[in-house]
Length: 238
Ligand SMILES: Nc1ncnc2c1ncn2[C@@H]1O[C@H](COP(=O)(O)OP(=O)(O)OP(=O)(O)O)[C@@H](O)[C@H]1O
Ligand SMILES: [Mg+2]
Image 1 (cartoon, rainbow, N blue to C red):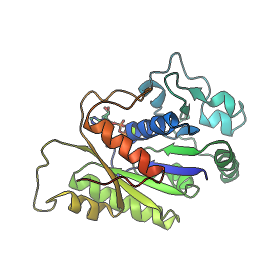
Image 2 (image 1 turned 60 degrees about the horizontal axis):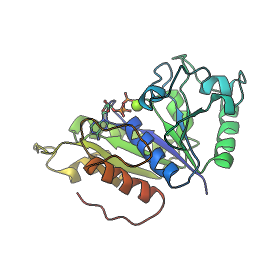
Image 3 (image 1 turned 30 degrees about the vertical axis):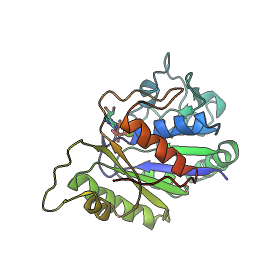
């Protein structure tokens, strides 16, 4: 069964794209067909994060509007089997509902994992993608504002019918400093309002996905989350 997963967050810079790419890399290393669909219109960056050579020519909007084939808009990652459909360059791009229906129909047929990496917050584009995804991975920093905004996003996604939501607490510093309103990670989970899928520690210099998982605690956490997405029971440690 194909999985369509929305990667979203209330606040920006929490690690969504990094997480999405590493999970995509981990799934691809296990032989799954994985497409990452980048939807941050006007603010493309995953081609750079993956270190893809040369310029992106065609993007998601070109594919959806028929200016190129779906295959022509897909960029290959040389170090792994993961594939990327880069974000539209037009910041105002909003695809029509029928085009998106056809795109997701193709996505479920052609890919084992169809991973949608969103801009932070809740744009009309994110809303349209959310209606078509089977699961959301909500990403939050272990901070009150980030967790509260993720809780708000969780409610908005539920209104769109996206009820299968999991939480990743990302960029956990070595020393978590408790505050009266955020005493521990349980408080983060309560504010964000979704079941925990994993916790990724802050690890400066995390490399892009490659032919093996990154070294260190962040790499182990990313591997554990990858396996949970595949339905394996992997113990959660906080
Ligand atoms: N576990 C981590 N440890 C250290 N740095 C990280 C970690 N995860 C992500 N980062 C860094 O945090 C920054 C933001 O990451 P990323 O672009 O993935 O966030 P984002 O949520 O996708 O941002 P945006 O909301 O702008 O799309 C990047 O510099 C990235 O390298
Ligand atoms: Mg991002």
